[in-house]
Each structure stands twice: as structure tokens, then as C-alpha cells.
Length: 510
Image (cartoon, rainbow, N blue to C red; front, side):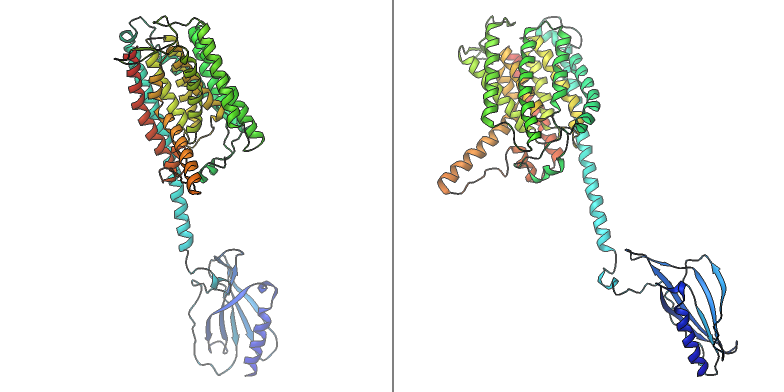
């Protein structure tokens, strides 16, 4: 009994050795062996816990013998100091004749007992696995959206190229005059290639200059993820489209010069608006101030059109061609009013539509193609301008598709609207423009309906009623759960059908 007591005391001293500090000893196996002078063997598991983790890292395997005899000495000898992933064994021996045989406890070298802190943690990693799977699903969804954005671009470019190639092959039947090969395809391709290449320079440059968009308060919450994306993309792709058209015609067309001037004037208005919003966050030009400037530019263009000799097969500049049986309709003094209204409505229509990646740019590209076909019999130079602007929009879409690297901003949206209005004003093709830009018209109407119904119901019932969840209409679809690339794809398909109808109406009207 004295030897047993001494062995216990010596073992306690052993556990307080320097290399055991900060560790935990867990009994694994206890055995009594009388063959070696009654050695008393005790195996312990020695483990370390890694800070901040539930994973345990066991120390090296080592076997010690502690001999407790009648003397007070404690001997520690190393029997095996090898690299192992197992537990550390400590063997203690004690003399005595009261050995009851061998007692073996279940080893815990492979089983981890929870500590007091770990009792509050989940028993398995199900929460972690579920979170990981949800994260992977989110990444897969984003990847699918990116693929859908690429497919939208591929479909748009394919459709536009085939349509322009077909028109170029049949141009002699449309115009009844010999035109140069690839008359519309050439400006379209040149603008698309130049804008797409310049975009790889301008997009990083705009990011360095911190020309980044701010999320408006009226935008959905989903749009907050796009905060910080470079904006004012119209600053580089609109001038390229206008310059390509001027170079192809040799700066000799009065119609293209007037359209370019009006386009750049509206781009300047949008540039001021974007610049103020960047400097003062959500503040920008007031609505009335912007409309006043747009009306001023539209009025100037009407006066220029009235005093300038433009090519027209009717020898009249205030005529609107319509399908039979209406024919040619002379508006006279109402023509400048229609021109100003067209400038304001088209510019703001594209500006309202510019809420999803690739939506406004793709629809504008298709609308330019439809107008180029419609005005080809009346003024072939204006058709070149439309094809060049369409190519600029397509080149910009390579950087504006989902997920957009840059936005066109008000600089691009207002300029594109002015370019379409200038094409219609120079040729009188307002009705084909109205058909081809059906999506823009729908977006504007959705805002008008929403505001009128809300203010009317609020006046009579003291509580405003919203007809749409959010206006413009594309935000309503987004809040209904439809994914962004699907909305854009549907808009492309609808616009493709509309421009075919508008081009046909323009050809039979001419």
C-alpha cells in the first residue's frame, strides 16, 4: 500500500512536468502486470486542441515507464519517440501483490470527447454543409445568369448581322438605285469592332477615375449589388458611332451632320446630369430643367431642318409618309412640335429603360436597324448613320451585358434617343419609329399610368394605389421573380418582331 501511495504521488508529480503544461491527459488503458516485479501500467492519451477549431491534433506517440519502488525516486525513460498520429501513452509501474489482473478501458484515440465549450456546438456539420451547398447554388445561379447574358448577346448579334446582310443583298429592289456592297453592313461592323476594342481601355480608365454609379433610392434592393459599377459609358461609344458615319460619307451629308449635332447636344445634357449625380450622390438635374433643355435642342433641330436643304423625294420637308390609304400627310406648322415631342419622349424613354444590364443598349441597337431599313428609300445617308449607331450599341453590349462592367448612364441614353428622333425627323418616319420602339413606349406608359393612378387614388381615398409593384415596367417584372437575363431576352425577341413590322411599314409608306 505504501508503494501504491508513492506511485500515485509520483504520477501526480509527473503530470506537472514542463512538457505537459497546457495539455490534457485522458485515461485510455489501465493494466496490472505482476511479471515485472508487479509493475503497475497506466496508459494515458495526451491531446492538444487547436485554437478556434473543433479538430484535435494529437501529439507524438511516446511510451514512458515510471518505476515506483520503495525508494522515492522517479525514473522516466523514452522507449519510442517516433512520428505518429496516434495518442501519447504513459506507462506507470508500481510494485505490490494486490494485483487484480488487467483492467482495460476503451481507447479514445479515435473518439473525441466533447469539452465544456464544445457541448454548445452542433453535434455534426450539417449546418456547415447546408450553408456550403446554398453558397454553391448561388454561384451556379450567377454563372447561369452570365451564360444567359452571353447567349443574349450572341442571339442579338446573329440576328442583326443576318438582317443587315439580307437587306444589303436586296437593296437594289428597295431603293431601285445601285448601292455600294455591304452598304449597311460596313458601318455596322466597323462601329461594333472599334467600340468593343476601345471599351477594354475605357472601362478600366473609368474605374480608375472613379466614375461609378450610385444606386438611386427608387431602384429595387437587387440593384444595390451594382453600386460602384463605372457609368457614363455613352461618353465613348456614342461619339465613335457618329464619327464612323461621318467618315464613311466623307463629311458631305447635311442630314448626318444635323443628326450628329443633335445627338452630341443630348449627350452633353446627360453628361451634366451624370456629373452632378457623381459629385452630389443622388442629386442631379431637376426633371423640369432637363426637359426644358431637351425641348430647346429639339426646337433648334426643327429650325435647322426647316432652313436646310435636305434630300427628300417629296420636295417637301413637313410631310409624314403613312401606309395606304392615308399616304402622305402634310403637318405644316405642327411638324416642329412633333419633332420636339419625339426628341423628348425618345430620350426619356431610353433613359427609363436603362435599368437592367443590356436592356436599353440591345433594344436601341435593334431599333436603329429597323429605322435604317425604313429610311433607306428616302435618305440612304441617314440609313448609314443608323447602322453605325447600331454597331456602336452592339460593341457597347459586349461590356454592358450581364453582369455589366459599365453603364451607359444618362450620357448614352439621352444621346441614343436623340439619334433615333433625328432619323425620324429628317425623313418623316415617325410612325415606323413608334412601332420599332414599342418597348420604350411601354416603359414610358407604365410610369405615366403608375403616377396618375397613385395620385388620383391618394387624392380621393387618402391612400395611394400602385397599379404596378414598381415602375418602369421592367422593375415590376423583376419584383415578380423573373430573372434579369430572361427579361432582357424577352425584350429582345419582342423588339425583333417590332422592328420587322416597323421596317415593313416604312418601306410600303415610302
